[in-house]
Each structure stands twice: as structure tokens, then as C-alpha cells.
Length: 131
Image (cartoon, rainbow, N blue to C red):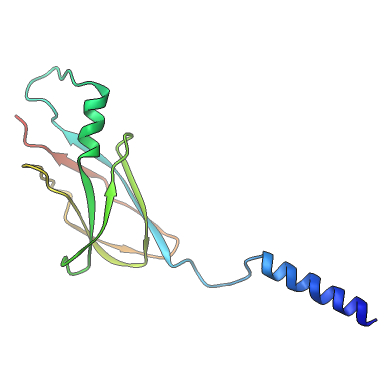
């Protein structure tokens, strides 16, 4: 009888260790969005190569500041598909762009609140100022 109890106890302990039975919510959320950058050429048609267009996205970052906009906490790269995404701890942040040259955007700075297991979508249009 003791052996059966011991075996059941060990199997139960093993299952508990393998399964996540905690009810604690995730303490992270996600921020994501599509970034549009333009114009990239002073005249149309724009004859940039794919590599040059990718470089325009690689050169820019999405900045995530603390809620008081005192310190940059995260620098998020923009993918070649023009999407940025990152997991952030829950909290309130200010999102902005890394203003290279004369880049500007009417979409940021923007205050966002990250909630557990939630996704915040913030699309950003960057005007390069090229005319």
C-alpha cells in the first residue's frame, strides 16, 4: 500500500512540475504596428532597389520611453515587411520615432498602456521631408 501511495505521489509531483498550473497572468503584453516611410525619392518614379528600401527601414527605430518620457527603455527595429513588434512588461509608456534627419510623424509621440497578454497596435507614418 505504501508503494502505491509513493508511486501516485511521485507521478502527481511529476505532472505538477511538467504542467503550468499557475493562475498568475502573464506580466507582458505586445506592441505592434505597421510603419510607412516616405517619400523616399525627391521625384517620381522612385527607382530605389529593394536593398535601398530595406535600408530606409533598418535606419529607423521605434523608441519606447518610460511614462514620463525621461528615458528610452526600448529601441524596436522595423522589419523589412514594415512591421515592428515587441513584448513589453505591463505598464504605461510613450512611443516615438528615432527622428533621423528631418523625419517627423503626426502619429507619435503617443502614450500607450500595456496590459497582461494584450496587444496594442500603433501604426506610424513617417514623413521623411524629402521633396
